[in-house]
Structure formats: C-alpha cells, structure tokens
Amino acid sequence: MKKRFCSIITAFVLIAFGCVSGEPVPDDIIEAVSVVATGNGFQPREPHYLLEQFVPVSTGDRKQRVQMASVLLEAIEAKETTPAGRTVLAQHLAKVAGDAEQRALKKMLDNPQTEAKEADIRIALGETEASSIKRESLEVYQAEIKSNDPAKQIAGLSGISFYYPEAAPELCLSMINSENHAVYATAIRLLAELDAEELVTAFPRLSEESRLKVLRVIEEQRLTKIQKHISPIAEPVIKANKGGAKKVLLVTGNEYPGHPWRETAPALAKILAKDKRLEVSYIEDPRILAQPVLNAYDVIVLNYQNHQVPAPADALANLKQAVKSGKGLVLFHFACGAFINWETRALNTEFAEIAGRAWNPELRGHDPRGPFRVQITDADHPIMKGLADFDTDDELYTCLDGTVPIQVLATAKSKVDQKDYPMAFVLKPGEGRTFHCVLGHDLKALNDEVGELYRRGTLWAAGLEIDQ
Image 1 (cartoon, rainbow, N blue to C red):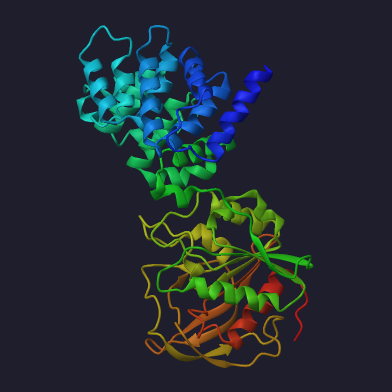
Image 2 (tube, helix red, strand yellow):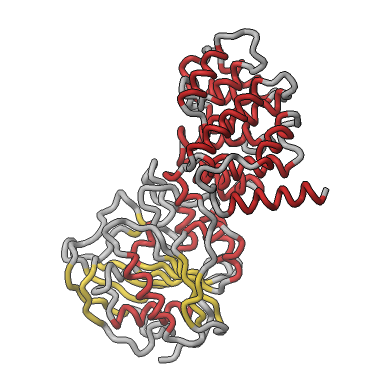
C-alpha cells in the first residue's frame, strides 16, 4: 500500500510540473493502464484519475505521446481487457493517436478476429469517420444509449448526433450522468459541437458532480469556444466599504455593444461607494443571478442586458424570488431590456413584475442621442427631496411597456413625438423595493445629477434613510 501510494504521488508530481522532454512514460501510468484495462470502467478511481490527467499532458512530448499511444493500443487489443475498460482506453487513445496508430486502428476494423469492437475502434479514431457508422433508426440508437454497454452507448450517441442531430442534445445531456468517463466525455463533446448554447444554458441546472465533469472534459478536450461561458462562477469582489450596513451587488458582464458597460459599471460602483453604509460588491458574470448567494445581498444593481444570448437559466426566477422576498433592485439604463427572449422579441411581462416597466422591441427605442431636460414629478418622494430639474445629454427612452402600477419620479419630453416618458420610477414588488432609471448611456450621460439619482435610489432600495 505504501509503495502504491508513493507511486501515485510520484505520478501526480510529474503531471503537475509537466512532462520532462524525452522521458519515457512513468511506470505508474503504465500500471494505471493495466488496472483500467481489467476494471469495470470507473473503479478503482485513482488509476482513472491519473490517466485523465496525464494523457492530455503527454501530447506535448513526441516520445511520450508515441509510447502512450502504443501502450493504449496494445491494451485495447489484449484478450484480458474488459469491454468497459476497452471503451475507456479507446477514449484516451483518441487524444494521442498519431498517423501510425490511426492506420493500425483502421486495419483492426477489417479484422473480424480483433478483440476490440467496432464502436471502440471508432472511439479511438476520434470518430473522424462518423459518416461510416451504419445508419439505423432513431429507436435503435436510443436503445443502445439505454443499454449498460459503454461502447454501445457511445456508438448510439455518435449515430444520433450524426443522423438525428435534432434529437441529440437532450440525450447527450442525460448521459452526462453516466459514471463512465468515456460515455460522459463523448456526450459533453458532442453536445458542445452540436449545440453549445444548450450546454451553456443547462450548465447551472446540473448537479455539482455533473458540472465538475463538464469542466474537466472541456479542459481535457480543449473546448475553448465554450470554456469562457461555462467556467466556474467567480466570487463577487468587494470594491468598497467592507462591513457596511447594507450589502450591494452590482451585476454586469454583457450588454448591447453600444453601451460601454466596462466604463459605466465601475463608475456606478464608485458613485454608490460614496455612502459608507453601502458595502459595494462587483461581478462581471450575470450567471450569479441564478445562484442562491444572491440572497446574501440587500440590493442587486443590474447594469446588464442579455444581448443576442439567452439569459442564464433560472436567473429571472431566482431574482424575482429574492426581490419579492424583501431584497432591493436597481435597474441601470438598458437593464430594462434584461431577460428578453430573442426568439420571440416580445415584452417580458414576468420581468416587468419586478422592473415595473420593461423594453418592448415593438416600440420606438429612443430619441436620437442629445440634450434634453429631466423634470422632477414627485418632489416629495425621499429619493427626490431637494433635487431640482436638470439638463442631460443622453438617450431619451420611449420603449418601456407594462401594466404594473409604478410611482413616477421624473420624466422627459420627447423631441420626436412631444410626449412625456418616465426616466425614473419606483415600485414595491412583494416585500421588495425597485428603483428603475433609464438614464446613463455612457460616462458623459452618467453626470453628477444622474449619479446622485442612482445613489439615492440604491439607498431607498436598501431601506436606508436618504441624506439630503
């Protein structure tokens, strides 16, 4: 046991510090191949983990890659290798197989005496010839996926993905629950290729174990296109006033390209930080809106709009629950357009329940950018006491829609149709408070008067007394 433990530690050290150029594959790794070959496809876990970590690293050294491929190929052909073990090793061989191994594998396809099944060989070939998989009915592939044979499951996933791609995403998602690394890795890779958006959308709903599987496969197979969308959610960073009476979370990270959120969001955080009672935290990842940690904050400030992408799964439901349970919500400029469904492009009435008014794409968007006067309409409200009408240079929004009762605090007259439109208003959804302001297109528009509106509006949403 001590010798085995020391061997595993040695292998971890080699993996952690990278392959030594020209060095042979460590004995520990070769032993791990032998153990996996005769196992049930997922236990014991230590050798599986060693191969999952080492095989991708070995591709960086030609000598190690060639030897690693040879060891795996030999094990795949061995009579004593179990079907489950063969499938796992074929998955690893796909990562390191060169031209020589590809030729050997293709010869095995023509040899009916070979121990390896056709499905395993195609796995090892990296499924580069998916079109040569025999076309079967959808039901046949579904039956293969439901079987207990990893090779059949992978063949079924491959066949459905190639011949019935519209049915593949749901089945790939379900197979992430498999305990077999080769099976769930294939499911994740195929889903990333067929419908990366579905994988990104489903990721927050997966169990913690399944999310870790997805992250591991993305790293192993270098699925860089979706990596940035599916990486772990970072912790919000406290920007100011740690330990303040009320905790504010400013959420940003995506917007219409014409809205410079990378400038306005930090500037807004600084404005809010002027009041020492507000502990201001900041995160550039709207997926946080779907997380339970949202309830740890007293006010959520949105400088966010899901431009041309789906909003994070369950984000709106989680935000609604938080606000209606007593949290504060502050909406900045085009946050009125958050949670839009880009397929229907229709008013999101569910969001409007907590926003008061939301973007309706069927309405005229806004006046041409330019100067206009903001008029105070409720001077007695705590947010507006002591404030006077002011001039600004901004976009005068005319696109808000909804039927939820709101209390309008300030308006502006459109130069296009001469109608008055709300620029700032409040409402109380459930036990919560919402301050909604559509001013602040860019740093020029986020002037002193507008900044003061947001500071006061956030204090009101937090239930704090507003100093005049």
